[in-house]
Structures are given as C-alpha cells and as structure tokens.
Image (cartoon, rainbow, N blue to C red; front, side):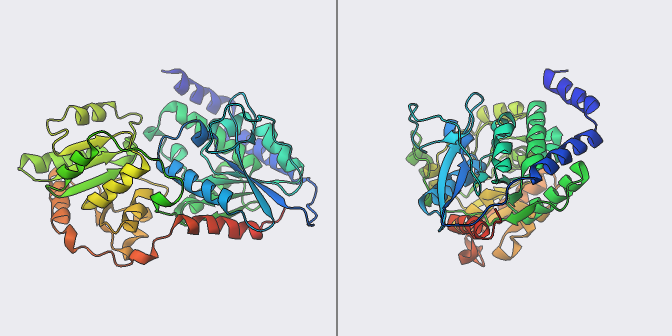
Length: 417
C-alpha cells in the first residue's frame, strides 16, 4: 500500500463523516458573524485566483476556462468594481500579480482585505486554497465573500479513476471550500445538482450558500490563447486531408475513454479502414499502458497521431481540419471539447450520457456504452463517412466566453456583500 492510500484510510478512521460535518458547520457558523457591508461610493474589489495557471499552464480544459474568464474580467471590470489577479504558492499567501507577466520581482505583499471584497476561486487550486485557508477566512471575517468555480465532483464520486494523492487533495479542498464558500459557480446544471447533493449529504449544509450555473464558451482565439505550432505541423495537416479524420481532445486519464476509441479504430484498421485518429491531450494518470500502446503503434505518425503538448493555436487548426470530434468520456462535469467542436461547426459523436444529451438539439450524435470494439468501430466509420452531410442545427446558439463572463458579472451586481 502506498503512502497516499494509507493516508486515506487513516483520515477515514480518525475523522468519520459526522465529525467532519460538525467541524465544517461550526466554522461556517463562526464566520456568519461578520460585519455588514455599507454600500457607498467606494468601489468593491474582485480578486480572481489564477494560482495554478500562473505557475504552469498545462493547456487543459479547466485552464482554457481560467485563461478566458480571467482575461475578460481583468479587461472589462463591472461598474463599481476593480478586478485584480491574485496568486498563492505553498510558501507565499495570496497576493496581487501582474498576469500574464512572469516578473519575479513583483510585490508579494499578502492581500489586505476590507469589507465588500469578493474572492473568486476561478482556478482549480487544490493546494493553495487549503494551505492558505486562514487567510481566506480572514477575508470573510472582515466582511468579504468567497465564491468558487466547481468543475466537477468526480474525485469523490469515482475515486478509482484518480490517483490516491489527488483524491486526498480534492477531499481536503472540498472540506475547506465547504466551510468558507458563500457561493459556487457551476459549469453545468448536473454539476450544480451534484454539488448541492454532496454538501447536504456529506456536510449537512443545505441553505446558507448560493449557486449559479455558467454557460461555457468555445472561442479559443478570443481570450489570450496559448500559441506555438509543433514542428512539421503543416505536414500533419496534409496527412489529415488524405482520409476522414476523427479528433479527440482531453488529458489521457481513465474516464476519458481513449482506450475504447483506440480499440475501435484498431478494429477498423484491421479491416483496411482508411481513417485517421488524432488525440490531443497531456499524458495523465493510470494510463501508462495506453500511452505506450499509442506511441509504439504501427500506425503512429501515419493514421494515428498524439499531440501531447498542443497550444490553443494548434488545437484551433486541428478543429478546423478534422471531419468530426469524438467525446468518449465515461463522465464529465461539462465536456468543453464538445462545445468547442460545435463552435467550429464540426459534427460530434458522444457517449450517450445525460451530460452530453443536453446538446442533442444542436445536432450531436451518440453511441451506447458497452459496445464491442468492432461495433463501435463500424459506428464511427459510418459517422465519419457521412460527416459532410451532418448539419449542426443551431450553430449560432453556442455560447462564447463573453457569455460566460457576463453570467459572472450579472450575479456580482446582485451579490449581497
């Protein structure tokens, strides 16, 4: 047994659910006794947490959200507010930063909070939120508010899909935000419902916080996109033009379904199938065997391609070049590549999950879980062969990042300090 697995067992033994819930409710009650904000001519301050993306932008879906929303909030603050990018590390508490500058001589003075301040936990900062929870609690005691973006709850719902270490980190983060948060921005209605259920069942918290569901944007090029094109990228695009191409975007991790898709294409290729498969995503956890299979595949570089460090610029061109986008995830909080594909006017074939069914009216097609590799391969081939006849029935109805940010700003106007 590794150390992380041992720690999980010890925590469960030492802190059973009822003690954990009691502790969190006690903290929430103590923080309710904060000074009331008196509205006057003073502008309120919005602190936007970009701790993770500032130290390392891995180009994941979450970081595309952070980059787009943070940029627009900083460029277009709502009337009566000033917006500040903030960051923290294990050693440095939350402080204002000049993002995206990487100036190491910047002032690292800890934030001095005042009544009416609002902290937006936009980044998925599992460690810094936990380490600096006392600093965040101080904001609330001084009359501020804390809101966090909730991307999904999968590490507590399906821990087998994640490393023990990340399950522990997520659980600690969830306990901190459950004790501090005034509200949550959820990236989909199912996530909002799951969050309310989790807070009620795990911590007996039901009615002293608010939630809003955010529309997710798709327009990669509009908000500080990452740039850079891999070597021989034009040659790759020429190869993709030679035969029908399916694109799959997302970190290689167990829940994303890359293994199912590769098995389906292996079946197609054994039948002399003239198709391309492109994976775009960082190497993740618990997929070492799959990663090796992709890199050593006999069709690697010919009909099978894996870009493990693609910029937004490269991804945008791949969306434009492919014939369709596959969404094979077994679970998602939202599934950003799906909405990105629709924004580019590309057909989508998705696993038949409730989270993806909400886009059915936009022209998304579906496949059932549990199909054999051969049947799934045939299904994909038929879909790709008719890709040019697919029509996205509502291409104009795809939200942009402006819609995402405007939803946040609209809620701020009504946010009671």
